[in-house]
Length: 312
Ligand SMILES: Nc1ncnc2c1ncn2[C@@H]1O[C@H](COP(=O)(O)OP(=O)(O)O)[C@@H](O)[C@H]1O
Ligand SMILES: [Mg+2]
Image 1 (cartoon, rainbow, N blue to C red):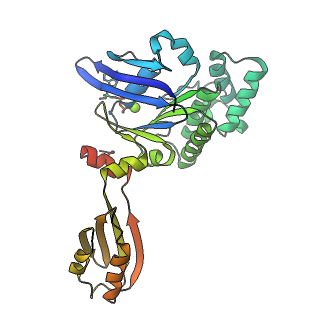
Image 2: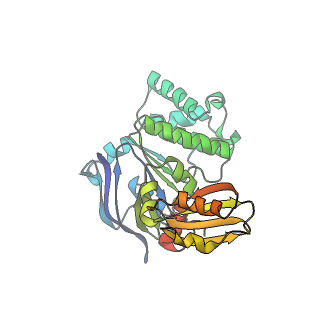
Image 3: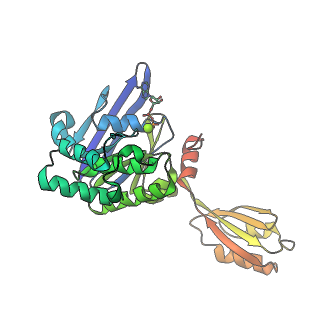
């Protein structure tokens, strides 16, 4: 895959405090690259450096193999940014807001008008185009903020926590819009501390904590690398005939627990033993009411890497 942006050994300090610590990563064409990490991890700092809003102490950033310092204008022309803080004019209408930002990117005339309409429609605000931004809900303002960043159809869109504190409907709208933009070929960098969003939209994930990237991969590879176990949960009608020792004779079983008819079995992932588990339950004349298989979540991955929860 072609690399749009390459970052090598990026370093950023505020006074004595190093907040981004020699991180390196690539942004490949067409991906939805998610930075997942708790508050204070250094996501916004990294993103703001990429956008050229913040300087850095050491490291190298390349746009398509050219040092960004030598092609800043070309890079910015192809960039759309949705910052963590809203960046819209409250006293202007939705339409005027989008127009203003599109003008900055050089759109004009009929093309400008068409793009404004198309973009407002895309974010679901066409009917409110004449209304001032200050009359909008938090979620609508967020969608307007996104419209301002995409009207010029950038090659790379950077979004910094665009769904914090908004209603579920706007959140779903934003997440599905991102998937649509990606389908149309836009490359997207998305930061969040919500692992559900990463599960839903990411094609690749960089897990960030305390200024460093501690893991990288797709949601599947990250979970696989970290966990070689899976967990079966069987809900039983009556567990009185069950002998837990019987399960330990089955290959690949690591742990068996029974709490009030809820039998939890932890087993090695690469051993096929579900049929034996079920026949062992049935052999003890116990009826199975329900069966779940639990696999690792990204929250588990983060917990296992850092020893803390994403929402500490
Ligand atoms: N202007 C600043 N001056 C001093 N420290 C800052 C400044 N901006 C951010 N920081 C610190 O840098 C660290 C990373 O912050 P940030 O990049 O905003 O994290 P995130 O976006 O992951 O929540 C935090 O410890 C934060 O307090
Ligand atoms: Mg941030």
